[in-house]
Amino acid sequence: MNFELSKEQEMTRKMVRDFAEEKIAPRAVEIDKNSEFPEDLFKEMGKLGLLGIPFPEEYGGSGGDTITYALAVEEIGRVCGSTGLSYAAAVSLGASPLYYFGTEEQKREFLVPLAKGEGLGSFGLTEPNAGSDAGGTQTKAVLEGDHYILNGEKCWITNAEYARSITVTAVSGKRDDGRNIISAFIVPKDTPGMTVRSDYDKMGVRGSNTSEIVLEDVKVPKENILGDPQKGFGQFLHTLDGGRISIAALAVGIAQASLDRALAYAKERKQFGEPISKFQAIQFKLADMAMEVELARNMVLKAAWLKDEGKPFTKESAYAKLFASETAFRSANQAIQIHGGYGYMREYEVERFLRDAKLLEIGEGTSEIQRMVIARQLGC
Ligand SMILES: Cc1cc2nc3c(=O)[nH]c(=O)nc-3n(C[C@H](O)[C@H](O)[C@H](O)COP(=O)(O)OP(=O)(O)OC[C@H]3O[C@@H](n4cnc5c(N)ncnc54)[C@H](O)[C@@H]3O)c2cc1C
Image 1 (cartoon, rainbow, N blue to C red):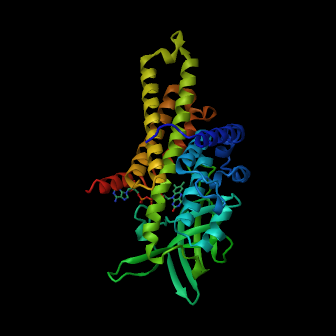
Image 2 (spheres, protein in one colour):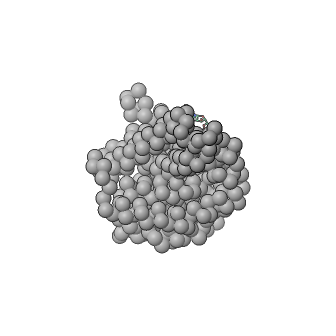
Image 3 (cartoon, rainbow, N blue to C red):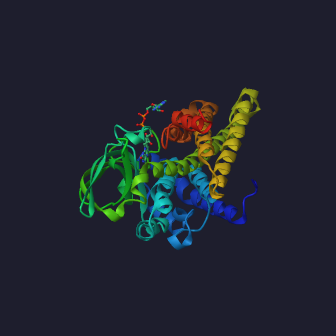
């Protein structure tokens, strides 16, 4: 693996960093405090081509790669976890399955507007009774003539309220061995029978939209089934493998922000007549944080590189997601500790990093599920 970023990757990183610092950072506190979804920022990000980074130009994208996309997620996550999560979900969960599995017509109709940033995508897998065990989906799709009729409920779906289209999974039949066949369906947001509510009061990532979706006799043309109807289960496993790289990149962003704030504060805060950064106990915390951030970033870049090279990356994306999300939580926690009482106050923002980081150990497969994925890859 070549550890030097290409000129294009460096340029995109700088462009996203400038945008994040100028436009997103000054609003991060309010976005969190008011649980405000920054729709206008997403429009600007769309115009800059950020929502289409990993998709080819022929589908409205910027023709970048997974590494470039991961760098963009990190930069946005470094200033605002909420915006970072909605960005990562829009690209990795909303648009990517359409690119991986969609027919040419589906790509033209549904992927192109998302890649151009004209709307956001959303991915509805989780249900009240099917979380880690997503194969336990209870939403049903019944074929009636030329349409599927969908009934069921999805919970905690990122971006659904602001989405142009939502890809939802549903049981569409039974295999010979009696197991359910799960398929994915592209449901345009304005389809009658689909109700989207965003009433959750969350601990962190408060400005990221999280919605409940109720599907009552939702009628979608059978052309809206995503790719091969028999392969919905494999589709979402592949989608989540890719999504984990972006969650890991977001975690690196939060961990880096925690380190930056803690280091700056430690150099400034004086106790016992000298900056607290002179105390070995504080230095060791900062050293561990710096080492873990570096390692987590390398894991993200390796998983992204493997994906770009068309090599298997299931194990490496699980490594990256597991390690980076736990690193983000530890780093944010240490940043609060280094700030002492000030760190416990909202004004210093590091407590927001901890609240935002916690989600990353849960969404797109909990830490326990990542360990199961890794163990399976080891042949257990
Ligand atoms: C803010 C937010 C945004 C989200 N966005 C989306 C989205 O856009 N789309 C979407 O489809 N979903 C989304 N989710 C759902 C998320 O992916 C699930 O919450 C997650 O997969 C875990 O499912 P669960 O919450 O039902 O937990 P459960 O599966 O009930 O797990 C509870 C606990 O049991 C553990 N556990 C479960 N099974 C095992 C096992 N076999 N072995 C060991 N431990 C186990 C878990 O690790 C966890 O600690 C989001 C969730 C949140 C909070």
